[in-house]
Image (cartoon, rainbow, N blue to C red):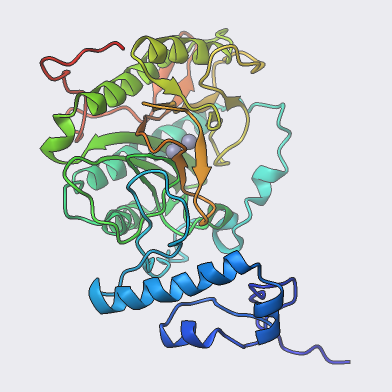
Length: 390
Ligand SMILES: [Zn+2]
Ligand SMILES: [Zn+2]
């Protein structure tokens, strides 16, 4: 018996695989991936709300092609909490030459080796592995600095993704986020109320925005991971709340790094971070944590950034991990966009994040992704008249 040839794509309305029947209006407006197994399925199995959403997509795409030069909001009915919107279409998937070593998920989207790890066992890196981590982390700092130098009002986050992708390839490196659990782009760009994992798209940066760039790269079998939040334009630097948020987050990370040495309990970092955050009127997002990092992107341990956490284990020489606190001006809770990656604060207030990859040494810590003297960004003083406390 022969198997029939089916398209690999699933029906948007039910569990069947889709036929090649595409929503005719979507087809006309060149909205991709809008397949259903039948017209009836669209009408019967799709809740009314989703049908209306679907019609709204038509409307939004139509308006876009007429008035905005081809860009549109793919989820027009979503209850956005702040002012940031997704601006589609996403650019085509960027490619990586086969000559560059790729992680196991590059083709499949599934980080197989990471999934098989014993979550209770933390790797201790030998000196060759430590040397490999120093190398990839140095390269990742170069990439972040190259991308950060392009941050200014008027550029799109997709342009920053292009710059990041190119800088990775030039360093014989794979951009770790690309296709990690099907993430579509080569870095995460999270402006304003976006907590993390924002997808680079056609949104133009505005004077007054703040923007987190989260860079991860894979070089000769090892990952590096770092991020910083930047002020976009002078308007952003003139807002005392922005400055309080960003500079407090930067200092929280620095304060946590200061206590890294053999014997420090992993749970201590959250104590240091949340205490400082609260003193400056900021809250700590508890959903996202730091993580081990080596030949895998996110191996154990998981590192909470909030106080009174129950993380087990202590720092040992040879461990590599990240600390990457996210602080919020308002409620530290998040809401996912329908793209399943972007998460925004529930109250639309802003967040900031900073991240370093660290190596525990015999008597302290090496900040493998440390800034250079000429790195863009960096701390700024509070504007006069602003207060650092609530
Ligand atoms: Zn990161
Ligand atoms: Zn990370």
